[in-house]
Length: 149
Image (cartoon, rainbow, N blue to C red; front, side, top):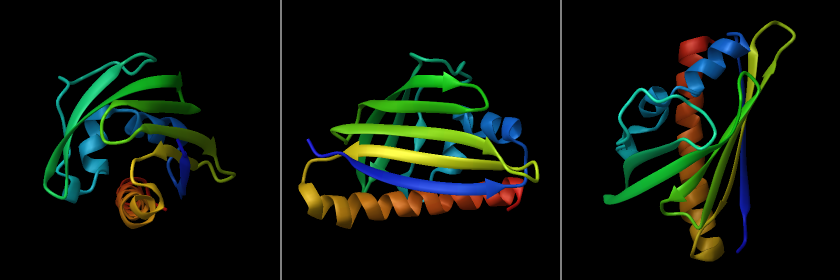
């Protein structure tokens, strides 16, 4: 199984604790996910984020409904958290969120997605990478609007 990596970095004006709290609140996933995915959380909210927590979602990819379950695998408040797909369209999916402070007191967020999918290089380039770029462009726009760039 070949695993690929996608990286996205962003700096905003707000302090790390504020940005971490926003990104770590599952209720904000809908605002962070582009409308074209028709994303919705199935798990009753609110949830307490912690290692071992599972969250169920529904989304649509090109009109096809896809169930998705993720599990929080790592949790270090104000520094790092990660989740992995337990059920969904990927053979493997891990999304890591890393937080750091800037010299001016803002926050730097780094997202690292490790993933594997059936279909090889064609599906990787034509489908997954394009969608990841769109998803993170939308997410970064939401963060800039909320916290300033």
